[in-house]
Amino acid sequence: MAYSVKTGPFPEPPENLRRVIESLRPRWRWIVALGVLIAGMGAVALVLVVSATIASVYTIAVFMIVAGAAEIATGLGAKTWSRFLVWIIAGLAYIVVAAFALAQPLIAAAIFTLLLGAGMIATGVVRIYLGAHLGAPLRRPVLLAGVLTALVGVLIVAGWPANSFVILGVLLGLDLAFWGSAWIRFGLRLRHYRTGDV
Image (cartoon, rainbow, N blue to C red; front, side, top):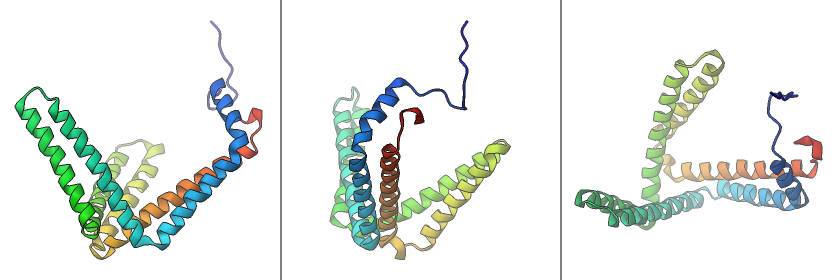
């Protein structure tokens, strides 16, 4: 029986990972440029926050139309009338709500913001409950995450409906800014990558 000697806490990365990183290294400038573009779009979203909120509503509506069409297609393949009706009605409901969101994006933004706040409160409560039942090393970070998530949810709901025109846009802008900065960091790390780094 052969035993391998580990030099660190993580197993050695597969040879495929080294090859992928080596193939990306010459493209590090493009990756940094992509990160700058995404972070720039995040900055624009934070400046034009109401427009970003409307863009978020339109994006959600498009995904709801796709989901509704998929549910209708699933219903058409159902073998019983009850399943057929459930899938068709659910798909039509998605499409009707999406059409409303496309026609009235600011009202839809208010509804989506309220649902987001309520969802964050519920998520925070679940995280707090789970964190209270975890062992010592994980308890504190999970409880902290739960408290922060619930607190943000309470702030969103407390400011509703006045904050409805900015919350989705601010979250979109922050998401793009952080995602862009992650691509920039990845590209810069590729620039300084050496074969023994992985």
